[in-house]
Length: 195
Image (tube, rainbow, N blue to C red; front, top):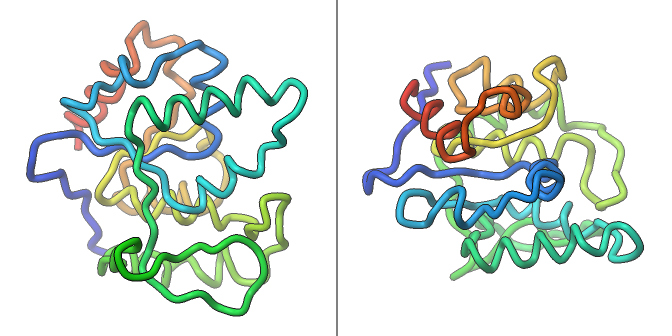
């Protein structure tokens, strides 16, 4: 398909978080602001991940996780990436942003969505977050051609993330992190050097 990862021109490492990474970071007590300092890293989430995180119930054992997510987003100045578009008549949370909020979808992202739409998106059931199954993963995977995607998803799952990985996307699976002996910064930087 001819897709290639493109590094940022300012030399910083772009990182996009999958929603399942919040639990990974929280469970290990990692401070993302010190692990991936803003002088070297730019961290973002697509709007769909913001929606998924917002759907985590704010009660019981989930309260500390919700607080951790909110604190980390603020401390790291994590930007939510909205694709430009206008509100449709569909139900659920708004996925696209208008003028001054959304950005145009790039050629590679557009081609990626075209390649996965029928296989992974059309006809999928709605989940508890009010997103369709695979919708969040597709949004994260589409960013993998301009940002390193951190995910805890299994490499074996046949979905948008694996499709992106197999087609030149920078998908960094965290399954080997604990045994690596590296800090998160070292783990991400080592992967970045291979791109």
